Image (cartoon, rainbow over all chains, first blue to last red; front, side):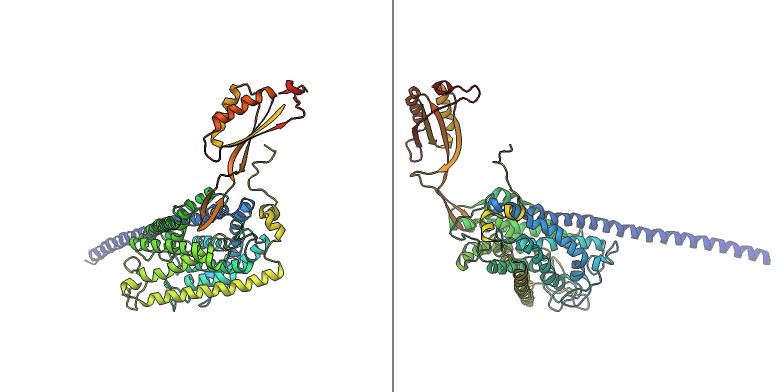
Length: 465
Length: 112
């Protein structure tokens, strides 16, 4: 009797433990599948983000280099392109050593800390505050491309008269004193203006309308004013030496901007698609409104006007891209194109500053108007960025009834303006006192390609056939 | 020997060249120049700023001829380059002291 009971017990034991083993195997498999799905999602996100990073770098080289290069006189084409190229090299080093840490490390409301100096701790593991599905290294390299193009934009203001050495030093300091605090405030953890991470004055800036365009555009205005006009401006005609180059550059900017705006979704998501679409619609609308304004004003729509309009629209949609509908993007574009045309064709003439390549007129003004319009047109239907404590979605912009957002946007814009003005003035004074900002009059007349770089852009007429 | 310099509209170059070859002109030099006479230029707009372009592209022909060919060459150029509008161009004639062929050092009429 006892033996049969024991055997029964043993048999039961065997059956139970094998099904336990089966159950363990099944849940192991499920866990593994879950891991693989997450990895696959992460792969898609990472692939898109690496492509986006490449697209944003393309915007600087050769996009901006060509766009600006074509607008200057032939004798300065290489020097102008060199300014963009130099940023690609110099800012990369600064970023790796300390820039990334100051922008995105933990610090206080205004600036990051030193936790990521020399990219310490920036590896394959995601930083969940910023982008939970991609390696932090991807996030870092993506953000680097923004840090590169921002100072490059400023060079448009002092084209054809700034010393290369002085520019290099100025830009290194500017990226630490102006860019890093602004980037940290809007995008960094604990940042005062960070809408996504609970900043006290949440400013909606999807891809850098304030961080990139307002700071660089306003700094450009300060530089243009401080350095003074080019010799011969405005009486001597200084038309672009090649609108062809500028056209190519502008188209590269438009396409590259998909990485700039849609990539700011930090994932290969529906939000990235939404930002992509809004970006494109904003560019198209602004190209049309600038051209229309020009057609009315001058009697003909120019190619330079069309591409300038497109760029103005891209600037204005930058803060709004991931928050607005395509139709709102059209409106933002239409407004920005006409507004920036007015700034460039009328306001610049009136106040007579020599912002040679309209860095302020397009980026400063476009970024400002875009940031404000973002406050109006942002909708939680596109991007539910605000929640209350119980997880309920809150309205984003004025069209949803959240009128206060326009005030927040205004505060963010004012902070960008003040930071840019004060920071730039201080740095200009320092660099001018130590190195000297402007080339000599003789060098300016000869041209910077020859005097700063010992080169000729086009040696087509030389006897060496 | 006479040097004939003609400033003409760029669009007339092909027909003028053919007409000269037809009357026996063997050599010519063609230069791209800019200039204006009484022809007004045009205005261009860049980002809201108006620029007046009054130096217009032209073609300059330089030919050195034997004196007996000069009248024929002038007629040929005028017939092909003339439109009757301002901007047709001008022809200048000057005396040449000497002409030398580099290849075999021939001088004078033989060098032309």
